[in-house]
Amino acid sequence: MFTATGSQSPRKECSTWMIDNFDRFGRALTSILRMAPPELAHDIGLAAMERGFLKLLPPPAPPQLAVPLQVTIPGLGRLRHPIGLAAGFDKNGRCPAAFEYMGMSFIELGTVTPRPQPGNPKPRLFRYPETRSIINRMGFNSEGAEKVLRRLQELKWNTTRVPLGVNVGKNKNTANEQSIRDFVTGIEAFAPLSSWITINISSPNTPGLRSLATPEFLRDLAQSAGDHKKKCWIKLDPDMERKTFQKLIDVIGGLDVAGVIASNTHRVEWPQAGGQSGYPLLSPANTCLEWIWEVSKGSVPVIASGGVLSGVDAFHKIARGASAIQIYTALVYRGPGAVFRICEELAQELKLRGFGSVEEAIGSCYA
Ligand SMILES: Cc1cc2nc3c(=O)[nH]c(=O)nc-3n(C[C@H](O)[C@H](O)[C@H](O)COP(=O)(O)O)c2cc1C
Image (cartoon, rainbow, N blue to C red):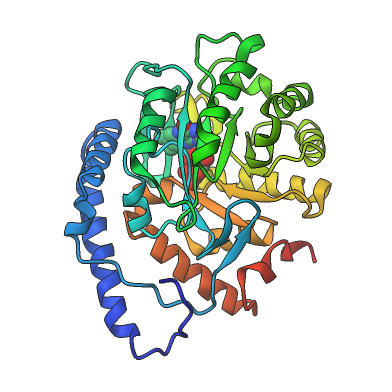
């Protein structure tokens, strides 16, 4: 899977046919799903994936890559390629295997809160196909740490094959002063069976959550997390002032945590209140990558998230210093074949620009 064979491979025709059919049927089903209201469509899709429905499609074949895409991420190891699943799609860990089948090279579950909570009232998920974007104000609907943990224990996931991370947050009714305890509960529950933990202090839909993005809070959290801090990636929001953002990066660089995920959704009030993802987020999220590099010069590992719909978008994240990329909205608009397609496009883009690997291209736009 995911090995470079060159674009003139005799296998190309055959595998392209197979990928095309996984992709074509997948896209057709996704566009039928998009006729339903967004959250219902998501629930139906997830339920189908949980029942192994993707395996009824013609099987996806390994994409033919113009350049090998393997990349090493601290703590996650050697990945087949740099494209993984962003948090929020499978909040309760119901079907990580389906995302592996779609070709994701690393998978993030969550956000999981310590206690179960319903999230915000519906409707809370809105699609804007004309701008390839989504606005959500889900508000951490979560089955809670205990139930998700039990599910993951039963799953016995092999994190060496495909790294699996859990994104943790705080309950809505936990006062900010007590929120460290919520995060530590999540960290201690999931660190033993996951490859990494994401600290979510950046969702715009939990009142007060973003105000935890301070040097004091992060220092306290790192101290309370003990040795687990080395597994923690801090997910930041793209709506901070440059100086505030860069100060945080500076502090994070000294905390001995794994790295930074940049970024979460962008807060909007119109046409709906919530967090915006997809194409309109690409530019603000890329600016965050530039700010990070300016401060850290590549010393803080970065996973990029925000607005990647194509391999060219992915390339620009890598060129701005990201080692890996997470996607969510691309699955909604490009269907389950999105990862294979994005990988092919990324490999083409790397080749066109004269790079022989992903690693050569990391931070290349600053050279
Ligand atoms: C419906 C929805 C729910 C999300 N839920 C979460 C979440 O629970 N935790 C989190 O850290 N990010 C969440 N996100 C943000 C994504 O993980 C990702 O950072 C963001 O969507 C940007 O990537 P994209 O443009 O590829 O979608 C959510 C995004 C969407 C669209």
